[in-house]
Image 1 (cartoon, rainbow, N blue to C red):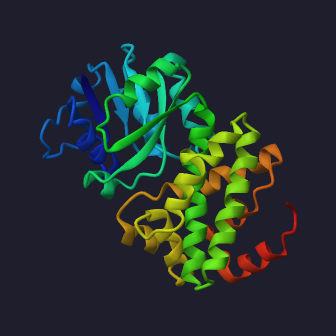
Image 2: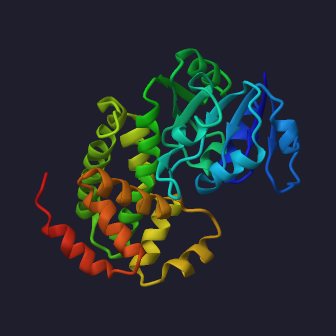
Length: 298
């Protein structure tokens, strides 16, 4: 099967690595890379199956400038919420393609481990179940695949877990202990679920790989760039300094701002996302901790 991965960062490169096991796979990005089977964007768009591993905040502009709808089937591997438009990524993509063309990838999967061929499990969520089955069939045996129809739930889980991962990094950076981290992650899952239900996401998605699985991974490991952002915030570093040191995109930062705005607009109770957005704007982490501990709403 001929597949093109668009986006040659760590996650795009890991997906290209896995998909190349059993398929004719290409990789592309706006910036030329010295990678085997690297092709231009125009050449990539001629493939029937596309994998988008693009920066969330640049996706809309990239689509406007580069995308030509030729009926391609698209696996969305980006995670986050578009801050400029306050829209979920399926809403962004559906301005350019039909629902039948879209599948969303989710689940606990660090790029570094995927590149080492270590086992993991992924969820393929689509409006058309046959599309989920098609994309899932392309992956090698060490990646266990599951099928879902909850596109919105998969998207929200993939975005929200990065927000909780930053908060978890702050907790560990402050040396609050295992009890505090477990409590934070558990309440984070409740908050994710509350937010997702407001947009029609299904309960089971939050208890599965897309929700709890990806959350537990991202919020408990220094392999997570979002966790590392939180850890460094707790050490007193400012956000600009952290992002410069990180040299990677931490989608949870902008996603926290987006979720806070969406929650305020729709009257959804999301205290962790709220406090994190305030911390990212400069609020003292210890003051935020005290304010969170005062919250008693379930």
